[in-house]
Image 1 (cartoon, rainbow, N blue to C red):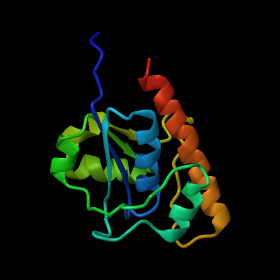
Image 2 (cartoon, rainbow, N blue to C red):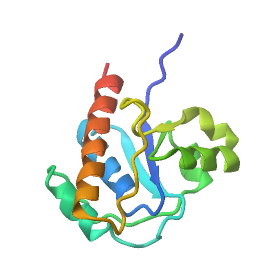
Image 3 (cartoon, helix red, strand yellow):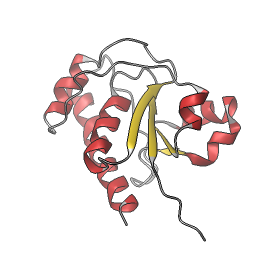
Image 4 (tube, one colour):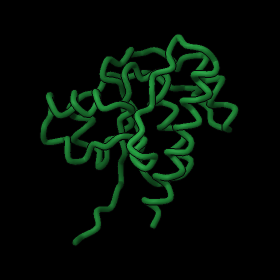
Length: 148
C-alpha cells in the first residue's frame, strides 16, 4: 500500500477563533514544512482569536497573534491533504456538503481514543485549560504518527 505524503492540513472548528487557530499553531510547531491553516464552519470572518484562547495557549508557548478567522470553503478542503475537525458534528457537516472530502477528514483527537474536543468559547478559564491540554496532547500524537 502506498503511503500518502501530507503537505497540507486544514484544522476546522465552529467559529475559527478558539480551537482551530490553537490547533493550527500547535501543529505548525511540529510540522514547519507543511502548510497548516484553519477555518470555521460558521467562521466569524475577520475576527481575531478569542482573548481567553490567546491567553491560555500562550502558556504553552504558542501565540495566536495575527490570526484572522475564516469561514470554511470547498476550495480550502480541496487544497488540503488532511482535514482535522474538533467534533463529530463537524465531520457530519463536511460529509453533507462535500461527501468526497469525508475520506480525508478525521477528528483532531483521533489518537486520543477519537476524543471530541469541546468548544470552550464563553466558558470558564478551566474549560480553556482542559480543551488546550487536549489540543496539545492530540498535536503531539499527530506529530508522532505523521513523522514516522
